[in-house]
Length: 264
Image (cartoon, rainbow, N blue to C red):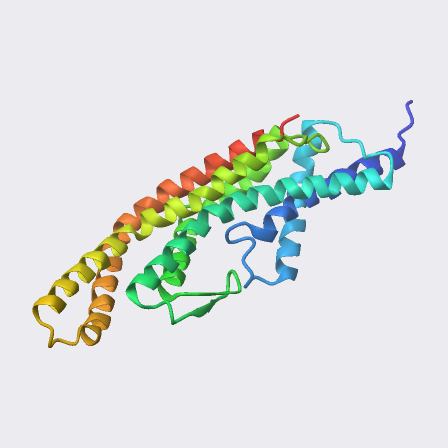
């Protein structure tokens, strides 16, 4: 009868759990919904532990996991696994940052730039339109099971990048730079209807100012900007939902591309 070394079994199981927990906890730092600042750190930590408990048996069946030989190597591996989870959340955060950028542009055009409120998800001062669009995107993200996709991407990452096997790729910084450049482009696409409508309004007011000098354009212009701006926001909402579909599908594709850059 072969003897079972319970210490080796225990060491492998504990090491696997800690590494899975490290990667799982990465998405709770910055990813949409899971990394929201209005969710307590204790709840996020407990959720990360629960996800790790569920995923560890699945990961152990995929391949044999051996703990690094030294404590220093194990700490380095923990940081590397946490970076993979953080990378998944970062790609999602970059995608939703375009909505904040669009909101700031529209707030400035409409006249809400001087009015700001605290966004509980990011703990930053944001405008009224930006906060509305961002909260609407989070609701749509949950309705379309985007949080399930994030967890699915985390689970798939263990198949794409086995534990303690990720390698640094020189193409990753360039790839993240391309993703970040999309913040401004997508933000301008969202804000374009409001921006164009306000531009036409300013052109019309300029013509009125030349033809009717006695009219106080500043008194008329402020409420007109508000009315036209809010009307355009209301008109663009159905198209905004369609654009969110495109953005979220792009986000899921970007997560897969980013993970494949770390494949050994």
